[in-house]
Length: 215
Image (cartoon, rainbow, N blue to C red; front, side, top):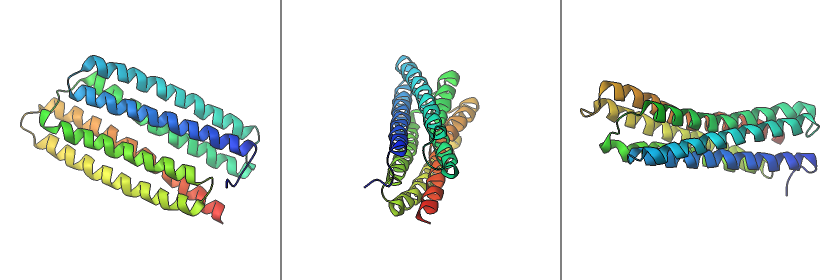
C-alpha cells in the first residue's frame, strides 16, 4: 500500500509521468543513433526533433511537479528533496538531447566496425535509467527495495562506464577513423555516458530520501 495520499499521491503520479516522458526521450535517442549509424541522416534528424520535443515536455512536467510541491504537498522539510529529485531526473533527458545535438551537428564519419559497440553503450545507458525508474517507483511503497534498487543503478552505471571506456579505446586505436572524427566521437561517447551518470546522480537522491524516510 502507498505510504502517502491526497496531494502527495498526485505528486507521485506526476513523477511517474515525468519518468515516462524522460524514458521516451531515451527511446527516441536510441532510434536516432541507430539511424545515424545506418547512414539514414533524414531519419536521425526526425528523431532529433522528437528528442527535443520530449525534453521540452519533460521540462514542463518538472515545473508542474515543483508547483504542486510548493502549493502544499509534503511537509516543508521534504519538499526540497522532491524538487531535487525531479531536477535530477530531468537532467537525464538533457543529457540525451545534448548527445543528439552533438551527433547531428558534427556529423562524424561512422566507424562501420564499431556500430554494434556504440549501440551497446546507448543500451547500457538506457538500461541504467530503467533501473532508476524502478527505484523511484519503489519509494512510494517499499523504502528498503528503493535503497536496493538505487544501489543497482550504481552497478548499472559502472557497467556503462566500462562499455564507454572500451568503445573509446577502440575508436582511438582505429586506423580508419580520422583524428577529427576520433575527437568528435570521444565527445559524443562521453555525452552518451552522461545519460547513465545523470541516472546515477538521481539514484543518489533516491537513496538519501529512502534512508531519511526509513529513519
